[in-house]
Image 1 (spheres, one colour):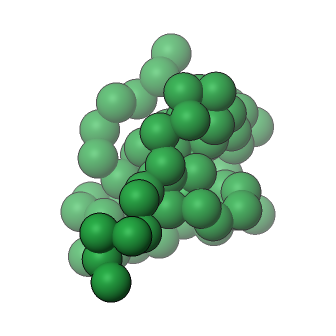
Image 2 (cartoon, rainbow, N blue to C red; image 1 turned 135 degrees about the horizontal axis):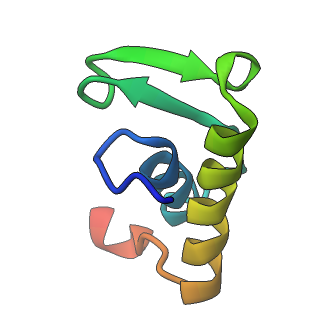
Image 3 (cartoon, rainbow, N blue to C red; image 1 turned 45 degrees about the vertical axis):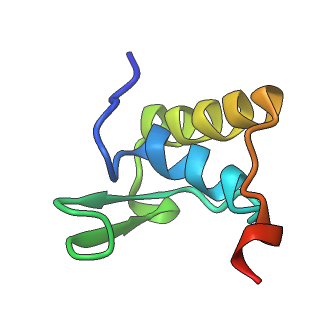
Length: 71
């Protein structure tokens, strides 16, 4: 089951794809970038799968940041 919360594995996977980063499974306990970052070595197989599902879903949707607007 996908955890939709901000900072969860699915969210972090989709954001890594959105920002053009390669897949690097992780998530946050608590607020993103303000909470404890959990690295792949400390993730369960289910959490890693959820991260990749978020990454792959965003890749299929082709929902990527348009960097031209940030120049």
